[in-house]
Image 1: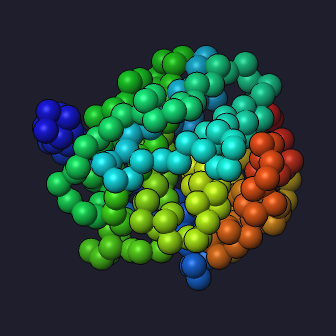
Image 2: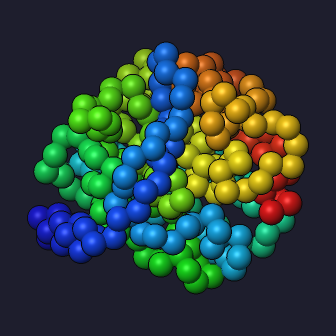
Length: 270
């Protein structure tokens, strides 16, 4: 209850900070669009602009609701190595010290939250409750929230949305009930979860043409901030109907390379 009270106080303090930003949404089962434009309660600074100016370290901060804890293993492998490998690969020429949690003890238990489903305002305020950096300094962090419910859009809970990024911010949410219905295999669920996280971090870091300019013709203009390469995690169907097929080749491997060369080249060129 202490953490919930603190989160509530954070939320109340945020009501004076309104900004109009898009929400990038990772969808599952038959949905093909990853963008939405709504009024969201978030900090006004733009994470992408600040990130490529002066970043020395990037920490992935994970908070999870009771009953929605992240996978930490798939088969015999550490699940969070997928995130670490791919973000390290994406940023490898920038000299940024990346910190990614490995075990559940390194993550923040948010307890049982009051509501069953979540608005954009909820996500922004939960993230503020665990954010350690103001992201204007050299030390930055991305908050990944795991929630035991669904994303509320247009007043209704959406049961096919795997995850979202509040665009322009380092706030990501993963909706655990959707992860659980994405496959009958726990190992596949774990990789779908990690692919969701990597996809949304890609958006938070400016992909595709989402703050980082494209350097080659690989943006899928019909599907927003996505890549035309079907072997890249930023391909629009790899964030939707084909995500299960996309992760299957990696099930028996500890080396999971998700970003295509064009996306990696743009981060290097930024």
